[in-house]
Length: 201
Image (cartoon, rainbow, N blue to C red; front, side, top):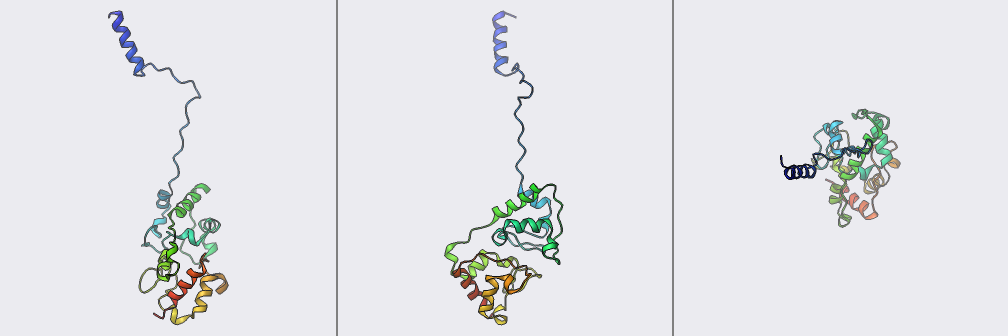
């Protein structure tokens, strides 16, 4: 083969990387582990059997779209660690976590799923009931809710407005040990919800 042709082939081979020098041992870039996927883990841990995010759940548990508005991080950790310790008659099982990071991944997914409550809805009890996903637990006028939680359809016939407001303002003060969370509501929002629920349906 002519010298000139051999030189051209050699140059092409180098350009193509066929004879690239080997990297020195220990200089390889470490492969970054994949970021944990909360949505996938939500399915893997069978949370989807009872719960849903973004819409009503078909299982025994409430949907969790707005759960991070109802419960803080410490409560979620305690619940995911040992549900019966918080609610002894719950159907929620103790999950087996491979690591604390798995639990945190699920919590981060729940936090990311929450929807902001429009300020314009602060005087509209019906919209607030939907915004806060009260129907995830409570049935109202034949819609939503789960059997283990109170049906609020006839609440106005059973409780006066002051009692309803006290319950919404401070559930533990109204009934110690209740599973009902304390909502961070403005005075206007609380008043709108009371007015909406007090209607004698």
